Length: 224
Image 1: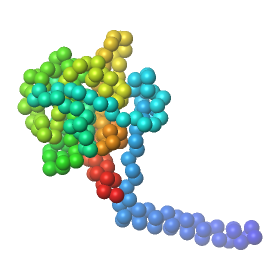
Image 2 (image 1 turned 30 degrees about the horizontal axis):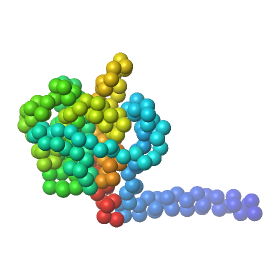
Image 3 (image 1 turned 120 degrees about the vertical axis):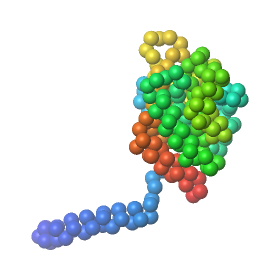
Image 4 (image 1 turned 90 degrees about the vertical axis):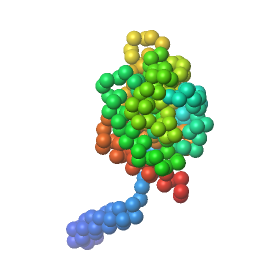
């Protein structure tokens, strides 16, 4: 019996490799897509997550909110009901990563202009500076279309809690002060159930391409 297996060992290895290749080819031909993950606080970098939810492993959703956009309109979760959207955190006077993030968000806006399922949402982390008037000037300068992309300001505590407890996208500044945050370059993909489905470097064109592909994948999942 042992001699039998030795005799056909090479044949078995070749058959296994051939099977893997065939399965891979079929997989690619059929363009089979893996479902996007659903991120939970326990699976995200702890630096970005409020300590009260760091160990939560399921049932995480974006909380209700009420903020004011660049046109002075109240924006709530209802404006994003049954929408896929991309969220981020920025401030208008930022001279480092924000201009790149805004440029890349604008590029996404152009790609989704005719897509009723997808929107954008940018939260300021300095609401005391980024008033409605300031956001309006910034929006006009950056080509923001309010029908697709809201820049929002409001109560700093609410924005901080959204950032840390919902989107898990900013860091504490470390000085122990209330509601002080260091925003990151993260773009966050939110599905129609208000679940986080992806994090992307908003300064990376490669990640923007990955985000656009994931939006397409997520849209397709609702048709199945």
